[in-house]
Amino acid sequence: MELPSELASLLGVALAAALAAGMGWLARGLGVRNAWLAAGVLAGVILGPQGLGRVDPVLQGRLFLGAEQERRDASAATRTMEVARMAVAVDAASVDTQELVAFEAAQRASEDRVRAERIRFDTPAAWLAAMLAAATMMFASPLTGRVAWWAHGGPAIGLWSVAAPVMVTVLVLVAHADGPASLWWLPALAVVAIGAPSPRAADRWIAVRLLGPHAPAIDTARAMAGMLALVTVLVAVAVQQDLDTRILAWLLPWGVTLAAWARQDQPWSWRLPLTRILAAAVAATALARVDPVDAWQGWVVLVVFVAIEDMRWLGASLGLSLWSRVPFNGCLRACMPLADAGAAHLALGGTAMLTGVIPAWMGLAILLSGAAMELLEPLRRGAAMRLDQSLQQS
Image (cartoon, rainbow, N blue to C red):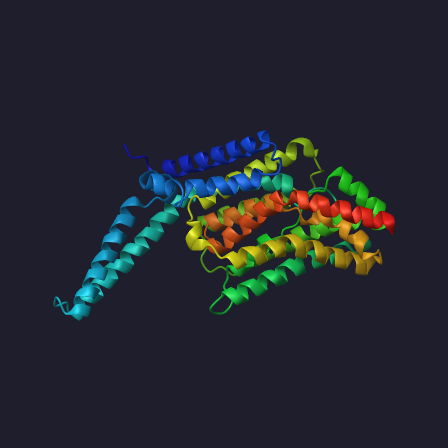
């Protein structure tokens, strides 16, 4: 008995979320503590066209692609069109112009039906993924906690922490695009611009030790990055000519980002794993519907990773050093937690890709970058130790 498309879509989300969480717990049991987000990406690939799609394409299509009959009709229309063109090319049959036009119209109509049915199939999953992303942003929102907005140059530092990764991402999009800027650039930049969650107590202590009275600027910079990202989202929605439910679903986690503004910081002991599990579930849900081989753009992934990891950190450090006159090495050490936004990137980027707000190749770059940030956490700790030694020697 064939399941209704809405139920099949939700069942696919449940399977993706369960596999992502299970792989994350397995990695943790094997001693790999920083692998929740990577587990979500890997689970999505396993359940996607290159994984489950090769083992059982019918099941993979039913749970993650939808539009089964429409895809069969589109495939038949494409084959008919190819046969007609081959016949004309070799003069093996007489096919007049009107027949070719009719075949082309039938092919385009079948492709339009596939797109419409895919949107209908993905809508329940998009809303459920948006709810998971909203829960993620309740804990990972850069607006968490209260800040003294204009103290010690925090807004200027936050602007630097956003401007640096956004400029690098714009260069990527300009180099990749064949034509002028597209409307989806704004949502992509908003995801890239989102800042870090609340720093750990140890990071706060380090900031106070290195920055003295300028330490609250770190929290203000986080909040400023969140506000700039929200403004970019609102501009992106305002310029949209036709809004559908999927775009509204994408707005849900952004609304929660704002709703978390006045919430005080919660202990990290339970919040961090839960945040990463929820983000991993969103990433797995989105990637299970995408063929990573078709969407792969290796150099884009690398540059987006540099943008959202290193450029935010370096930009904020430079801004803080210029504003506070604190030596750059001290600012570099204090601003290191600002680069830790992997869960937010996976949650918002996965929802954006699932809802069609950004193309698959850009979403894949954001998701892989967020997962790589988590896996490279030991390198960041090593860099922190070297900076601590350098600061002690100086």
